Amino acid sequence: MIKAVTFLRAAGTPDNFDKLRSFLLALGFEAGRGWNEAESAGTSLLAPLGNVEYFTGQAPQVAGLLFEVTNLDAAHQAASVWMKANSTGGSLGDIAESSWKSRLFSVEPVAGHRMTFWAWSEPLRGKPVAVDGDLSAAGMRFGLVVARWNAVITERLLEGAMDALLRSGARREDFLITRVPGAWEIPMAARVLTEIKGAGAVDAVIPLGCLIRGETAHYEAIYTEVARGIGQLQQESGIPHSFGVLTCETLEQALNRAGIKAGNKGFEAAIAAIEMVSLKRKLAQGGPQ
Ligand code: DLZ
Image (cartoon, rainbow, N blue to C red; front, side, top):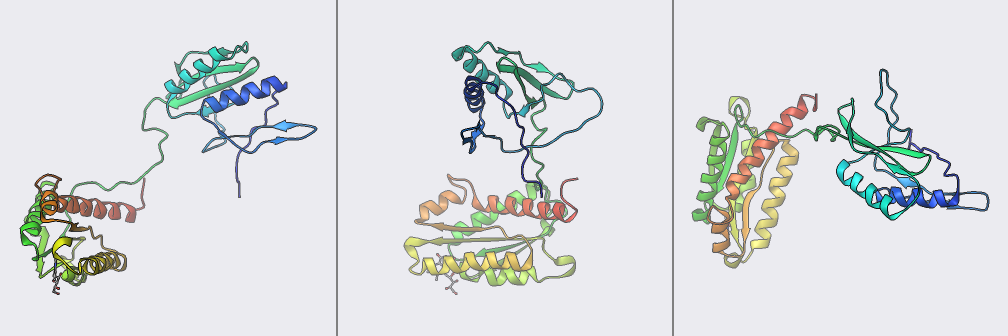
């Protein structure tokens, strides 16, 4: 139900009003919609986030207006430049460590209007909490579907994928490799893999194929169906499917993406699958703890 937090401050004079607005815009506030009427004028300065904090214990020496910034040194530099360009009788303090695991500085861009800018000392504090998958494949089981068409490429993709799985802690018995005639058949085989139950059930499917436009008249038709089929299967089964199907203009381009010059997309597809299985498991356990 709460929509926003607003701090009302009386600027005093029109000159103070202009100066404070100019200073806070220089420090990175976004200009909101103000008002200008006969009895009063207002300027609105927007921050991406706001909160109200109550506390117990001893607070650091901070002003009532407290602004968190992403880069305190850059903010201090911007404040310093503004203060030099505007003789206001205000003052700018140095950056200091606070007792609250943060660094801060206080400034009066206009005398009598004190505010404090701060940032966490530890860069990862204050960041939004996110859940990331890990890259450990131990304890996971994978189904790989490899198209035989353009085997010179797809076998390299398979090598890359196996390399990624083994190096990430999977054992050889933890992945089941199936071969299909061409990319068109990948979704069907992937579906069968997702339907395995019990000890052989797979945690993720890694499809590996290669479509080369120059040599495939109905390239678009096959590609669209393969992409749609794999995507649909992933949604329906809830089992992560990465996408290791190359779509290239030429054989040279395909070779480059299969380990020659532009990485190995099979390796990348396996890593993505590991990450998604891990993420899925973490989220199933309740997300960030
Ligand atoms: C038929 C065909 C053609 C022309 N090109 C490719 C290709 O570039 N890559 C690929 O994986 N498969 C190709 N195929 C085979 C089809 O995917 C499919 O296997 C056959 O049409 C048999 O259903």
